[in-house]
Structure formats: structure tokens, C-alpha cells
Length: 532
Image (tube, rainbow, N blue to C red; front, side, top):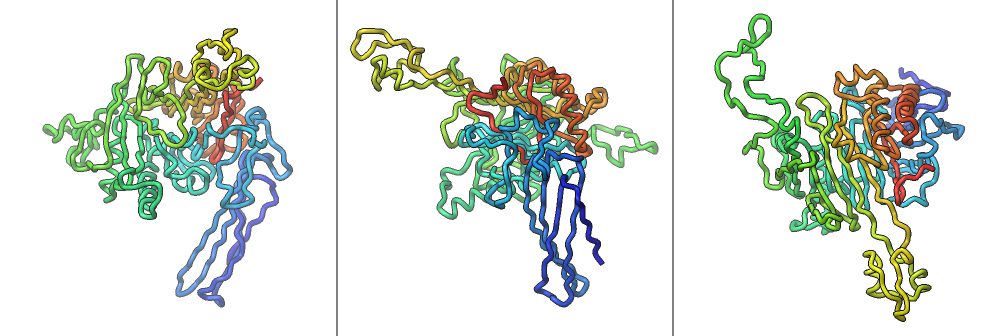
């Protein structure tokens, strides 16, 4: 006998199963409906309606199950109400869902229409949960920045591939992956993602797609020391190989916690070493003394298409991963793979304090100052037609009019200057050094954890930050928008309001604040946010 649960509450996570018949054994089949409701209060930031069809057939004490799931994402309850304490009214026009609308016609956008906003700088949250117990609402950390015709992935938590299957971001869209640190909730989805990317690339090659064996996709991965050994060891022990893609791992070296906590054979507690109290006796010299699992090069796990390189910290105390070839100072780096439209940008990394020995980074992606274009109507009115003079005017050089009677100043014919957009994501931390703070200055979007609501002593002892700490940092760097992630699975709907409130109090109105959730997208308009 199966129990059927129904709820009349209008909000929450709603799962409903439709009845189904069994073709295997029609006379012995039991089909049923069920509903599961998890409440977040009278209004909801996230409503995920999942319709699941379960087929239960009993034959020789055997059960067969079939499950079909579709998701909808909205910030409103059944009456169309939006809670301003959960969804920031000024950010609402730029927030939408990343769920793939092509899968189900009933998936609709978040909040206001964003058709008029350019979509070449979009942040997609695929996982906003913290480590520990997994939640049905939030998966482990994963954030995507879609920049022009490419996508940058920041952290790859467990369940990442499932999230990608449900949204518009696809594995082969990813050109660069940035790992903040090597805790499991930030990297356990990495090896599986690479193998999925390989399968997709292989299928494209076999079917005469855009990739050939001589033009295999290149994936760049940036992270702390040990990133290469982590990936290579997982692949080696699972009998997997990289063949159809080329993976280049760049380890950021020279930081305070470079190489982690030194662990050798002497540090490992073995049964032979234990006394009656369970403590080591430390007998004799250990084997492989001095070998560091983060830095050591193991010949046994090498593979041709998985390469390892290092990037040294610069004299200013941070790492330069990429500077556009058109930078004002002429500095150039080509390590970050660029695809699609020719989008110019800079990428930097800075170290933050998390836990002793756990090297942790924040990353900043900043557009190059866009070149100002000529307003042809103004130029024509002043007597300058299309031609080589346009090039000089774009460079800021005055020119003579076509009849040679007057000098045309560039400011007279150029469109207004468009401000470059800046994205900053900081990994798990209990303190942000001045160097990283400087890199984040004037960011359009600052993504920061809010693992612990408001107990600073508890948070810092665990290497994490509170909502108040996130709000204060956003104020210090004058970030236009603060998006908080790494939310505990124990956080309820009312707790979300509390997190937002505490961050706002510490921020003192300097930034627009929003708690992120899975499948939320934030579109940064051309020229950046302007909340006047």
C-alpha cells in the first residue's frame, strides 16, 4: 500500500508524480502519485516544480523504476508576488534563469524582462551550496562566466554535469577552468567533467564536426599546487585517459601556502606505529622522506595530453594569468584560451586566507577598455568622411577636415566612453589580504561566500566568512553588486532574509546585495551596473 501526500501551500519545492501503466506486467502493476513539499515560508525565492513519473512493476519480487524530471525556476509565488527581502529590486531586471528553455516550454525567466540587455557578460550559478551534506536545493560550488563567445568555469563541485544537462551551459563551451582551492566540494566534479568534454569532442571528430585531430579542444585549468596531481591521479586510478582534448594545468606557485601542509610518510599514522593509546611511536626513518604530494612529479601518472606548467607570483604579490595584447602597458600573456568573438580581457589571481596549508585564491576578470567608435553623422557634419582619418580619430589624434579648413578633435566625433566590466570571485576565506582587495576594487560583481550567518568567531575558526564580513568587503572595494554563495544546506527561507539583512547592515548601502541560488543568472549590462 502506498501513501499519497498532498499539500495546498503555494510555495516551496514541489514534486508531483503522474500515474503510469506497466507494459511488463499489467495485471500486477501498482501505479501511484506522490507529492513532496518542502517549505521556505509564505513567499519563496526559488520554486522548483519537479514532475516525476515512477513505474513500479512487481514480478518475482523485482521492482523497475523510471523517473522523468522537469524543472521550473521563478522568484514569485502563485500570486505573482516578489519578496524584496529575497530578490533585490534593483538587481531583478538583470536576473533570469539559466535553465534550458528548449527542454520544457513552461520554464520561464526570473523577474523582469532582460531582452534589451546585452548578453555577452553573464554569470551563471550552477552550484551555490557549501561543503558537507548535499542539499536538494543547492549543489556544491560551480559558477560560470560567459564572456563573449566563451565560458569560464570557477570551481567544479560534485554534480556539475547534472546541472549542465539542465541548463544552457554545455561542457565544450568551457575554455578555461579556475579552481579556488582543493577542498572536495570545489573539485570533485572536475575529472568527470573533463571526461565528458572528451566524449563530446570525440563525437564531434567522428561526425566530421568542427574539431579535427589536429585541432583538438584545449582546456586550461588554473589552481593551487597539487591541481595536476589531483587530476592525474584520479584519471590513473580509474583507468581513464585524456585523448580527444588537450588539458593544460597551470599551478600558481610562490604563495604563502604553496605546497600545502608538508605531508610525508612520517606524518601518516599506521597501525604498526600506534601504541596502546593510539599515538604514534615514530619508529625509524620513513620511506620517501621529504616527498610532497602537492609538488612532487610522479612518472606513474603522466599522460601525453595532460600537461603541467607553473605561473609565478609577480612582484606586486598576485598572479597575472592573462593580459590582453592591446593593454596600455603592452604586457601580453596568451595562456588563457580565447574562443568565439574576439573579446579582450585581463585575468588575475590573488591569495586569500582560508585554513592553514590550504592554498586558496580569488580571481578577477576585467574587460579591456572598449575602443570608442566614430559617430558617422557627427563626422560627416564636421566634414570628415570614412577613411584613414577615422583610424587616427579612434586613437585620439586630431585630424584636418576633408577640405583642409579646420581641425577636428576626436572628442567631437567619438561616441561616449564605455566603462569596462569587472568580475571578481573570492574562494572560501576568513580574511582577504590587501593585494586581493586591491584587485577587486570597483568590481561590477563581487561573489563572496556567506557560509555562516553572523557568528564571526565560529566562521573564522572554520576558515569561513559571515554575511556581515561579505557586506563589509563589498563596501571596502566599492563593488556595485554583491552576490553571496556557499550557503549552508541548513539555511531556511527565513535565514536567507537574515543573511541579506546582515550583509546590508555591514555594507551601508554601498552595493546591491543578493543571495545566489542554483540556476540563477545575472546579466551585467554594457558599461557595467549603474544603480542611480
